[in-house]
Length: 118
Picture 1 (cartoon, rainbow, N blue to C red):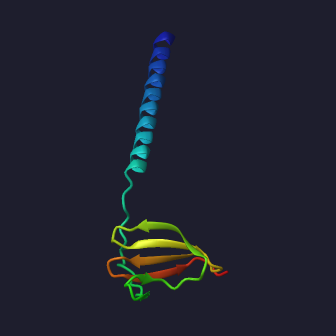
Picture 2 (cartoon, rainbow, N blue to C red):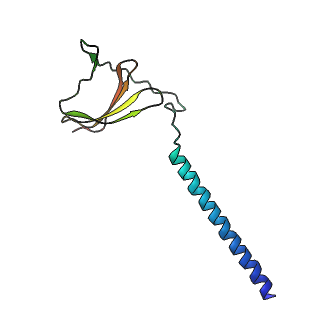
């Protein structure tokens, strides 16, 4: 009688181990898939988009977009958004780091975010 109970217990333990192993593989597979195929988050929330007043940068004689930034400023990163805007991270120039949201098709600066005062 003890042999029968021990065999059933051994089979249950082995079965649970196999299920844990398969579940762990599935979890790792889902994580890898999500890292390789990120989903773009929508720019709007449930409450609707937040409209920032447009900040128009000046244009020079050649028609180039001129952004008034301190000397020594450089671009740290540029991120393209799903709505066609570019988020440009600016650093240096003796000013706090900042993010400028640029609309290339409208040739204007849509918003500025200052990350901290220096």
